[in-house]
Each structure stands twice: as structure tokens, then as C-alpha cells.
Length: 129
Image (cartoon, rainbow, N blue to C red; front, top):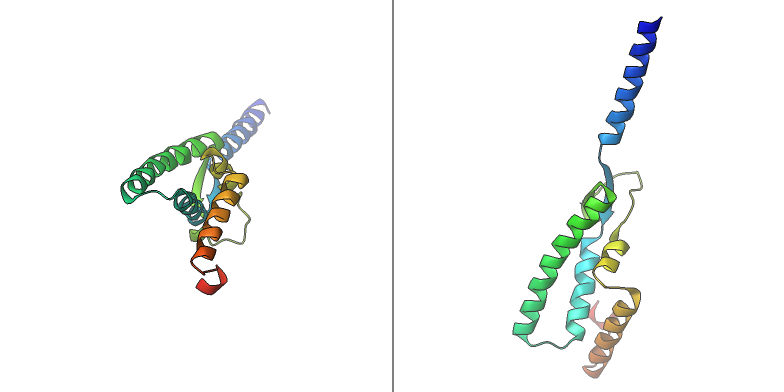
């Protein structure tokens, strides 16, 4: 009986440890993050050289923040546009935007600047669709 109990305990421990070692999955909407960064950069009215530097800095920071987020959540991050599943995976896009300093106020401000510029050129978002 003691042997049976030891086998059951060992099997239970193995199953529990096996489940914990499997990485969980979460998604990020990389298209949204890039679009938000483009709006923020466009609202700054930078010259081409400054824009190039800012884009490179953002790319390095984005990579670093994705790695940090992945380590923090102890999960595998997937680009949401590449995920086809009936299951609902956690979306960490907003957390990544926050880590990049792109909160709702920053995003809204950048969009407002861009809308004003487009109006001055007689464009609207609707006319571009």
C-alpha cells in the first residue's frame, strides 16, 4: 500500500510540475503599436534625420520592452494578427503601450495634432479611405 501511495504522489507531482513548466500564451497587437508610434512621431514634425534616429531608438526600446514584458508575464508572446484560435488569449498590447510611455493622453494628443494638420491640407480620415 505504501508503494502505491508513493507512486500516486510521484505521478501527481510530475503532472503538476509538467503543467507549470508549459509556457502560457498571450498576444500583442504589433500593428497597433507601430501605428501609434507613427502618429506620435508624425505629430512631432521632425526632419528626416531626426525621424530616422527616433525610429531606431523606438525599435531598440520596443525589443527591450517586449523581452521585459515576456519575462514579467512568464509567457510566450504572439503577434495577434498571426493567431487563429477559438480560445481567447490575454492581450498585453495596452501594457506594452504603457511601458513605452504611450498612454491614452499621448495617443489622443498625437491624433489631434495629425487631424489638425490634415484639416489644414483639406484632408480627413474619411477622404483617405
